[in-house]
Length: 450
Image (tube, rainbow, N blue to C red; front, side, top):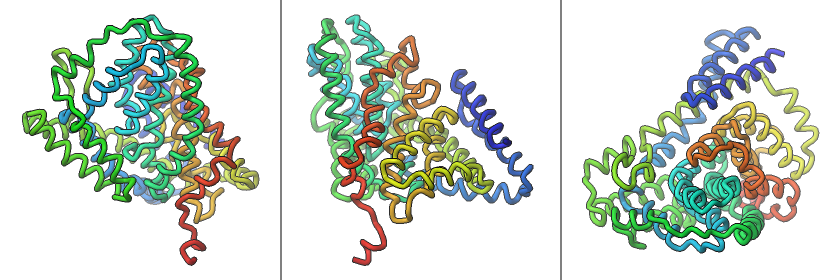
């Protein structure tokens, strides 16, 4: 009963924080205190509580370096003209008769390259919503296309912090997990393209006056060469170069382009990498911005506290009764995936945060998998908790990007976020179609011996 009471209290605290727009680290710390008191009530000493928290928190250390690289790369891609060039080409070649489809595809492309749902929503998403609003298109439909697109990359990019977290906590190889996700995304992407293509024919874009490409062209040197940092970030992991080295190569390339092709001030570039790039004046005000390395520290603080909380959950056996039921009922891969989706939905609703949802889903579901099934576990979490969080209106994963788009209703997009619910549903129902991908890269002892 104390666990249920604690979860309800944490849900209330997190929900208030999301609705008020306060830093999520504060309610997370309060949640840690709540469950530390529960652990104390159950007979654990303060030293034991700190030890169990530290055990959980250590999981976050493996991800910190990549988080910092992500913060750096987002800024230097702006000063190098990589992000402006992406936006320029995407916005310049929109087919008005297929606007909704292009919205989904362009947001999907950008999010895959930069690995950030928030970054894509605040740049490409805002530009496309502005076009849709000016043309009188149904905003819930276009918002659904944007949300689906930004979660293509947030779920399945080499640079996605959420995907890196899912792979890291499972002990899986991140590059292999991305490849597996790419395989299981084929059918959802194809069906989503048909879905948005049909709506595009019903609601074509009739307003074509879009000044943003010209503004980007006048502010940056726009050239296919500026896409080289993004190309490196995509190609090097495919060639089995470690993700951190791939990011480093992309950053160095972008630094070179910033100083040579864009003639940016070196101090501005370096400061942008640390504290972020934000244009507050001129025609690009509010269009291009990034938080830099420092912004990732706030994300990491939330991850550190969440991992500490997960450590307490594990050591006080908070979910043991639920785990036993799941182990008994998870006799087939299809059932296991279905339970992962259900746990992901509930943990997103109660945790109000994608990180908490991912950690809780892993903590509750991990005993349902064998030691040689870490890749499969990472894939199931990626097909469930990572993407379902964006369908819970009060969850940060949905609330923040929708707020960036400045649309009135925070939940009206859900019926049109086709990719976001097609992916987990097909992962549950069409397991035979995805089984080949699920087994890709599994490092079982038997295979190693062979």
